[in-house]
Image (cartoon, rainbow, N blue to C red; front, side, top):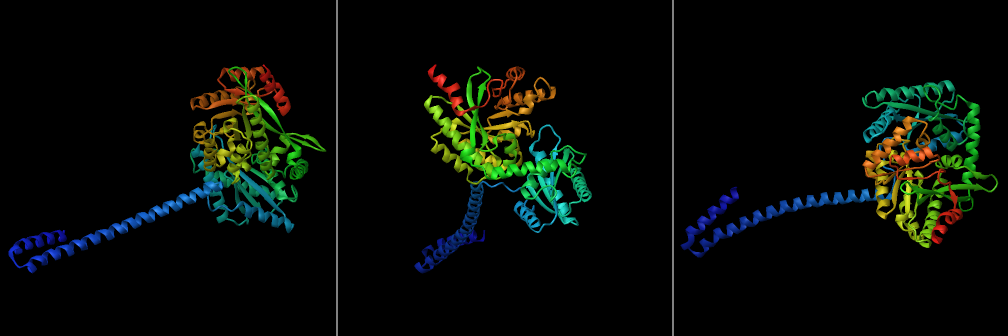
Length: 499
């Protein structure tokens, strides 16, 4: 304001001195120019500082965006809580105990909601409960427990005692801590599952112990739902079977031992074949056929599952591309993806590369996975599935109904179809509750613009029930069994070309 008054004063002085000498007349004008220049420089300095601040902010934003891009590009599982012990550290500690022949116990803790369908809020509450449990035992760690988050809904405890009494006391302490913390969440009702495996009683290596402890969580024994200590003879048999399967898997010849059978998929509209699902088969050179029910659950805990998944993608893409090109068809091939494969940093690039190498159109491929992956890794899966759907590949959710994910929360994942779980389909005509669940899934899926499909359809009753209530596609022994490549081609493709 003062500067503006000075401008007016100097201008007035210049007018008064208009008839004065030239020097007197020029002086106030020079002062005016000097003042104006100073003001301009001040404003420019402030603007420069402002621009510099904006530039700094923009630079920070670019850095953040680049960091996010790197995170997305690396396709790593987003961390939910940063204070949890790393899984690698946990495994290294176990290896050290085994090397030093020190006895110990592995305990897996899993918290499950009792709600019919689990929404995002419920899932966040469970994650926070697990975090609070971990913090509780770190602060009050008189038992020298090592704790690690093994999954988004599983905590692992390493306990340096193996006596059945001590193990049961510790398991009860963990359970009561979980129940106590959960009381703070009014809308959260849970089941606490604890699986236990002891070294050396139940296993001689960490892989076997992890598998046994994980399976123990699903055992329905006692109110506490533990453990393998209760039936040592039974667990010895299981341990022997698991160890044998691990050995077979670690020595598998992927190219030689594996093959694919194709399960035809049909439309309820006209019962015409519209696609097929690639199913993995293992024919061991000395043992013979090994059931997928025996090897896949164990393989899913080993790196070999990634090799299997990539092999079936590579082989299946080439097969369907050949058939569609030769017979001028538009068959859709469904391929099941293992969770471990989807977590690999190069998986998306591998998928793109195989499409090009096989000369396979993206719209000919459907990828399937279980809802468990979505519930445990929602942020990562959103990024990966966005990239996959941008390629033109369809995304279907397999075995829907097992983990009770709410349908509304699935919309953000670009899923186009839900495959109703086998167990629910098997209940048609036998279990009213399962029929009600199927009706609800189909109704809600249709309302959200999703298509419902069914697998494991084996009877006319199941077929008619699903068709009546608006299911879109089906597969199962009611229509046809899985077929070897040549048999599938002869039965469904060659005849169509001739006809």
